[in-house]
Image 1: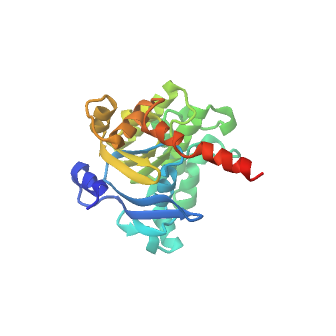
Image 2 (image 1 turned 180 degrees about the vertical axis):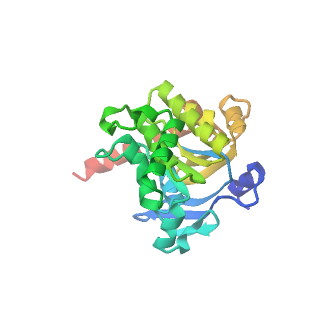
Image 3 (image 1 turned 90 degrees about the vertical axis):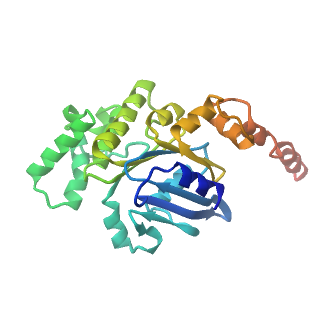
Length: 292
């Protein structure tokens, strides 16, 4: 058993079957491994935050979980189904059981807020329009946007677009919600409001949440467990309080712990910046000059 698998087994809440299981996942682009042997279990009802620096592979991992990318090696199981083995038709049926909040909100600009939320209901159910209107009102009320139903996306703020996107993501009452940088570009107060919505949905509706972010204030507010990626490898999976202890210096260990601590604190000096300084920048400049 690898260290990551051991961490998973030790720190995961008890659950009959993980709702998401990532097993030995490898993904390469142009011969380079962007994800290198990822193992991760996500359990029913929990909120797990996947974090790491830019380019670490966290968004690529999310895309594998929702079936928009497929691995070169390994597998992703979602709600007991191996995504690698599904036909497109079966995959589309499975996608109805989860929702996605995209980084921008991804609203259709030609539709009102209410029409955006109604779209999944019109596309994937046989509900009559009166019932759809009621469902839209309920979903918008859950995110505090009932009064904005008739507004166009261009008439609302960035934070309101995120909330409208969340209402649309929950329209079909999904079992799992995926969030791609939900706090990106928001002011601290609006970010905290989005975080509270994520916690409310998890707590009140029992939704399993997978959140990709590098916003540490948000991560520590919402997470039950946290998973840290670095250069395409999963280097730590643990409950939030263990990451808090690392951040606050209550746990001291090897260079890997120091690297995680630097990321969590946002320190300007540490293993991450030392590594960048030792990547042969001066040699690259000299080679480029000599080739002229």
